[in-house]
Length: 220
Length: 220
DNA sequence: TAAATAGTGTCTGTGAGACACTATACA
DNA sequence: TGTATAGTGTCTCACAGACACTATTTA
Image (cartoon, rainbow over all chains, first blue to last red; front, side, top):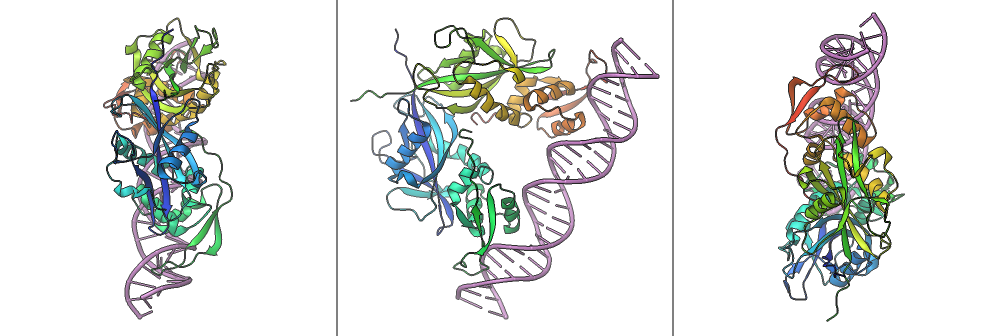
């Protein structure tokens, strides 16, 4: 019986966190500890264990490489698979890219959090992964409820919705138009309460709240 | 040094062919030769070799399991990855699902071609793969040029476009509306020539032709 | 009061879908 | 001529985007 020459599979995670203070979406990256590209920044990734679920591997990557508590991960989902044989100098490996959203807070110490607009050069083909997946993430916003809720949290303001949308799409929508978009999102409710005013003044934004988060389509 | 317990990766293919005579899109399935589910129908799939590209593995699956010539494959693309550990009774394996389009012709002998609406029960979790991916395929039509061109061929009639759309989406559009949709597809040209009339009579449909196929987004 | 920001209401353009009517084939 | 099918031209509706105007805050 021949031993099957199986390909190694790694799971690389685009860990996204909304920083309400910086008003941007940040991508979690960490310097590599071991040799290929040691010291260089990379997406958190792990080798998929035998029988391990992709989601569990993603949690392991976020926990281990970014030093976060697993409970901070609010949602995960699949992006696509990268299969260039030369993407890892150690030999051919498949990389399944997943996104993971973290509870929106100011970033803790330890991992490096980079604004999506200014991601530093990364190891392996991770620059390409980020570039390829960013439009996919932008497209998910307001369409994929677990993703959107995971990023913004259970309750958020119109101002925060504007910030997240601008971070992902690169374009700041008109508040009026985004409000109508959000009105059409199932499970999202426009409450009557206004949030505290912003530091620079301006009318206090409304608060929105999820009433039902719904199921992610798991894959896709 | 511990030996890494790597997960096996299989590539399972949704091989689609448009049969102009039957006026439907067919899915290629083949009885399994070997033991898990021997004799039962399944999607063509192979174990991914070390360093092998997903597309190459898909071609190998279509060639080997469906007995087709590799040159009949007009386009391929990624769908998603299935990771239930129990999907294969032999042990945990990852399955990367790909689509492949075949030149539109009447189906040859050998593999079984099932209309998308009447796919027989399949081995492994292949029923779930088909069910999960079908809406994704429907969504790709007229948006993803390589996919659409791969399915319909370089030249096709309005009638065939209607048939393919109905097969994938389950709904037959009005010819007028589909015509406008196609007018907006980049690289697709409405020619002046009418095709031969249909067997049952009726006005002969127009011929459409691709002028540029464009690049698939590889993944997604 | 000025600057900043959000919310309300309107207008326009695009695209999907439904459909009436016309055109062209076969039986 | 009747049936079947495709093509042309409208009409409506939903939604995205732009924007004027109003509301509410800080400086």
